[in-house]
Image 1 (cartoon, helix red, strand yellow):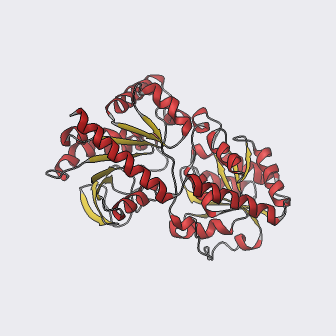
Image 2: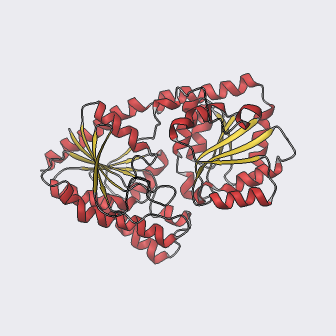
Image 3: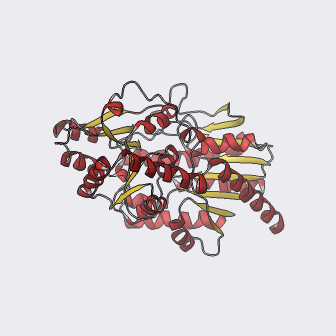
Amino acid sequence: MKLLVLSQYFWPESFRINDIVRSCVARGLEVEVLTAKPNYPGGRVFDGYRAGGCDREEWGGAEVHRVPIIPRSKASGIRLAANYLSFVLSGLLFAPWLLRGRKTDVIFVYAPSPLIQAIPALFLGWLKKCPVVLWVQDLWPESLQATGHVRNRAVLRFVEQWIRFIYRHTDLVLVQSRAFEAPVAALAPGKRIIYFPNSVEDAFLHPGSDASPSLPVLDSAFCVLFAGNVGTAQGMEVIVAAAELLRTNADIHFVVVGDGSRWTWLQQQARERGLVNVHLPGRFPVAVMPGMMSKASVLLVTLTNQPIFAMTVPAKVQAYMAVGRPIIACLNGEGARLVTEANAGLAVAAEDARGLAEAVLRLFEMPQEERDQLGENGRRYFLAHFAHEKLVDELVVHLETAISAKKVKQ
């Protein structure tokens, strides 16, 4: 099978699609990747790359084609919109030339925001007469409204029409959360929609014993660790408020590892409120994250109180389960349901700082054996439902099915 993967985000950016590409290559698929110049999450193009021009490189046995992009920046909504649109335009303009004369059996679109990145894939699918399989990670236009990037109703309706167009011309739609099925079906009547969850690489199942030496707090205190994007959707306010409620307990500390649009705000709040129980070491390489997580007492996932986020399962839920540490899910809906169903930790309502503080205290006071059991429950649930190799096998079957269905139509 000749597979073209289209994703605005790809290595050296840290996204799920990297592991999928590597595993597809290992299964004997001929994989090419069409992507942008890496600039997530910091907003600047990574060292060794330039924003302009087209590049080609090899990674993980796949041939990677990179098209120009306007870096996203951290503070500007206009710049973020330019980032999204520049990838669509670059894909439409340059991808047909970069991939000229190359046979493609199926195009697989990895689609966190922006979902409009599928537009170049649809054009390529038409040119090469091959199916397009779309894996939806974020709901659009709901995500735009929930994160505050777009509030104008006319703009949201315009985006919705484009999303309808994308769904209508996609051959198969995969969704990362069961709760996505209904809202996607509403915009894609008659389209086949299949639940296909996220996973994480096997390193999270077998974390190294050494975390970063710059985080001694992980060895000396009861630590609640948040890892990942520090953005508007994650509701950092609830962490600050819970830490303030627990500041008199010298044994409990919050550690936030990552980066994003709210990082500077988080630093300012911790400093202004004198929260010595909040530690902000910044971003670390993905390779050390499993070991770092395994040293935490509790792993924390948060989202704001928005209807769309109640339907979303943050990818860190699977990572936390794989590591085998107890989880506090400070969010609503599907993500909290999974943690509760797995008996992998505690769930509290989104943005409920007092509930979060009480959950931390409950786990702090819990015997170590009970906390360990919660972590083991999560690991077992992960292996049963989210194991990486199992899901990649399922993906290959979905791709083969899309190819066969396309041939019947032709």
